[in-house]
Amino acid sequence: MSDITNSLLDRLGHFLARRLQRESSGYQPYTPSDPETLHRTLQPGDILLVEGNQRLSAAIKYLTQSTWSHSALFVGDALPEPADGSERPRLIEVNLGDGCVAVPLSKYRTYNTRICRPSGLTPDDRDAIVTFMMGRLGLKYDMRNVLDLLRYFLPAPPVPVRWRRRLIALGSGDPTRAICSSLIAQAFQSVAYPILPRVVHMPGQASAESTYSRREILQIRHHSLFTPRDFDLSPYFQIVKPTLAFGFDYKSLQWAEKEAEARVEAGKEPG
Image (cartoon, rainbow, N blue to C red; front, side):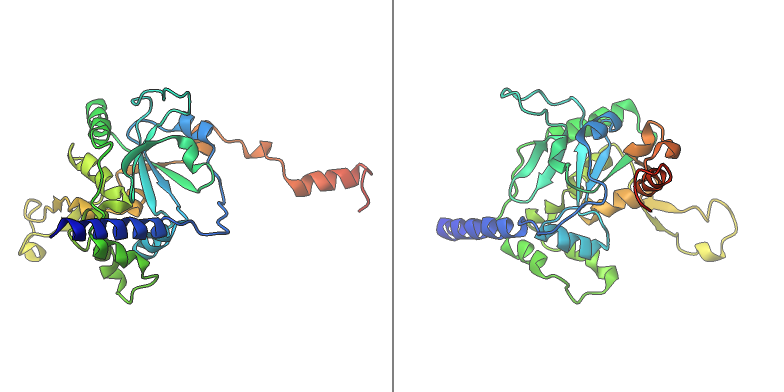
């Protein structure tokens, strides 16, 4: 392929990427994330799921039938403080067009988020996962695979639900990994930590009676098939909610209705 053709495809790819990254208007999170609370709650190796509001996010949420369209890995203080005095980046993620980058927690201040924590992960494996992601910082993806990008412009492709996940992994270009969960899945697979292993029965198992012959084999799927919702559905990741992590007393909640009733009873306001 000529240099001129490559240049044209690259520019077209970046144009499509910018269109896919446009945010939808009117997005209102139910529980906006507080960066300070997230910082106190998150641990290195935790995955932060995000409900995005980009055009790409809408496509991923439709294809995966999930609220979550983006994922990032929390690395704690592994990255240095910025020289300009700005907020320290503590998340590593993959963005369409930008590749693998580090961002601060405040980036998702106005989004719904969920924390997924790998259960029983050893300190050495935790460090290995963080090191894996840090080693991919600056990795750029080839935007010349235009066909890989075009699939996300179909708002509701007429494809059965069971095949929609395959649409995300369709193609051979790097934009396939634009949904970010792929690189995180690779990091966990590098230490043999399961996410959603597929259970495969051995031939003849249905009629076998011994425990050994009924044993199931867990097969690790290819990383390109993992999506953000898989960390939420995984039986190996604990869901951590910041509002509950440090104790929750429902008696301390201030209800507007009760306050109004109290003011009425005190004669401060008409009934």
